[in-house]
Amino acid sequence: MPSTVDVGNIDEPEDVSTLVKKVVKSGKPERTKNLRSSYEGGFSDSYIEKLPAPARRRFEKAGIDLSHGYPERPPSEKIPIFLDEAVAIRNEEFPYTERGKNADPGKKALIGAAKEVRHLTKHIGTEIVGLQLSDLNDKQKDELALLIAERVVVFFRDQDLSPQKQLELGEYWGTVEKHAQQVHVPGFHGITVIWPDLFQKLGLNTSFKNSLGTGTSNWHTDLTHELQPPGITHLHNDTIPEVGGDTIWASGYAAYDKLSPAFQQFLEGKIAVYISAHQYINRESPLSGKQNIEREHPIIRTHPATGWKSLFVNRSMTRRIVGLKKEESDRILEYLFGVFEKNLDIQVRFNWKPTKEGVGTSALWDNRVSQHFAVWDFEGKEPRHGTRVSSLAEVPYFDPNSKSQREALGLSLE
Ligand SMILES: [Fe+2]
Image (cartoon, rainbow, N blue to C red; front, side, top):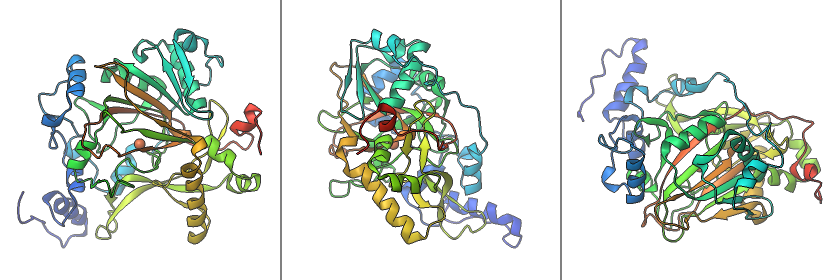
């Protein structure tokens, strides 16, 4: 890395962008390790020697080329540095087909083929036993999309699932998200690597005392800064700690039903600002610090398959409610975050352990109607590794004629 920077001719205003780019790429000003790695593409962060054995076996069986290193990032020249470059990546609406919409409401093809369908709690979370995701036909995939929409998250243990098959499933349910800078499986930009060991190497400072709010150990919904945030999101964990490493999900439908009718009415039609996890430089004010991508979405949204209303806020990514004073917005959001976080009856906590050796576990959640939290109790002392495929869905909308889940199911609204 050079100790000085060739900044070119700084007298010409059109050179400012180039100058900032050069400064950022050359190592100045001081940056976190995390940011440094974000701008270096390809296999610069290779951590192949740490790849857990079960993940390696899965990749080798699937013919994934690990010879250049692991994992891969998009090439450096494709990683955006400026905010406008990052926003431009998916700034136009694209078509989306809701697969759950035309599924058989009884889900006979899916349920009939399973050994067991087990609801893990009353309001959220179902485990399907005795089915391989890789064997599902289109009818079953449609029915699974509806089941995920209704139950918020659906689990499959003991899965022999290649990354390619996981990607194929994701492509059936929507346009697969390709992250601007996140690490992915070599050769497959749409398969994001979720690997705490690597995140720690990149500067994520997580410890027992400081586990809350770092990495994925915070309440969040994925990719809410997207114009069309993900619907079905599929994390397949091929390497799971012996004890712990659980994930918790909370239901947005149930969170909505927890609110009083007057408060529900106040929130309906309100818009909030959602931010990206990653930050970029504003070309107009390059020295004012990094900024998140911001996107507006309705706070209460309607799910296109179930037609149910859902509360769409989360502590990590919802910044403010449009039209309210900051102190009003802060207090209301804090209350709403608490509805998800404190009501244990609208959460499910899942341990990923398969019942057999050499296979992994899949969780498929509807990111439109949920938030989740990865529990850091294993403290990074045991490997945890997985691959995530996110299927981007519709532009979020609120249908004033839609019903709440409890209203639609004829449950008590008290
Ligand atoms: Fe997440």
